[in-house]
Image (cartoon, rainbow, N blue to C red; front, side, top):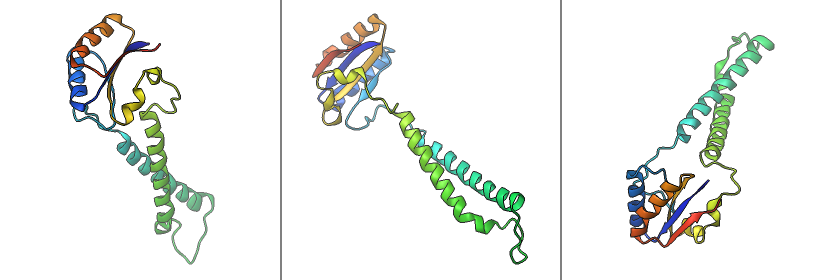
Length: 166
């Protein structure tokens, strides 16, 4: 896969390039020191953590119910076998454990990690994307789209304008 990468010194220039490329129907990616306002996208990680936490809590609760009602019924002082208040601490801890695990693995999946190498890392100046340079990348095999992307971005005077190494 090839493409073109443009780096800008200001966020507004990057947002203009992003808007131009999106208006032309070109799929783009941004690499910036902080999330730009124009690029909207809600994360699914909080929802994933909620579902993981509820699922983990329910799983731990039913595991305790199964163990103490069916597998090893134990009558202690005449109380019922389903003594659910005793299950609360482990149910809570299981919910927290699974919520954190879902959040951790969801974060890795959302950021395509572990991703040890990406050709965009070879672009000169790309390391500045985490400090003070705002990058827009177009990844495609269509050479016509790459040419159009260069033409749309060039008038905005990018600091870096390079081909994406294959």
